[in-house]
Image (cartoon, rainbow, N blue to C red; front, top):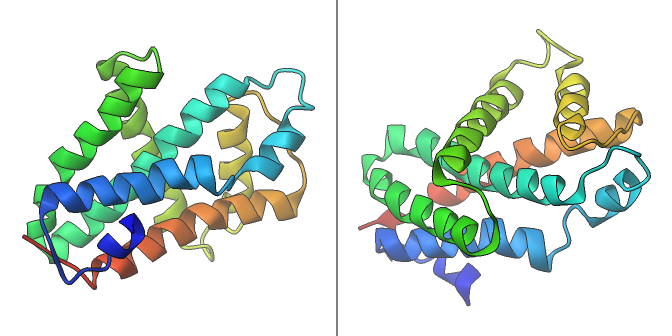
Length: 176
């Protein structure tokens, strides 16, 4: 039902933000077990920090939605109304489930948006190795190691595809 809400032709900004948060952050992390196979392998890394991994995944899921909202808001300014509601949803979850101050969360999201911007908007012909290097550095941030180039490339493209999917979906909706 929440997913169907995302595709209504007209939607209140607050309702749209809530549906986005539920489907593209909470459901993606909790219900689909999207990263479960990777996390299972990363647990073999001696420095792997599972709680930090969960937090980083959360921050990046929030950030990819925000990045897509920024991209669409350039074409459709009415999407600016979604930002504060989406941010509040993301902060509420941090307040309830994590012991992370709001300032730290905001800084982490800003850094994640910058990192995702580099990954998503860098022309692969100008830096072919970016997908491998970016992903390797990203997973190292929570103590994991993965040297498999297919895994690294796939993970980078999961982020790129999430962004593209969101942008395509936003083109179908009018926010009121």
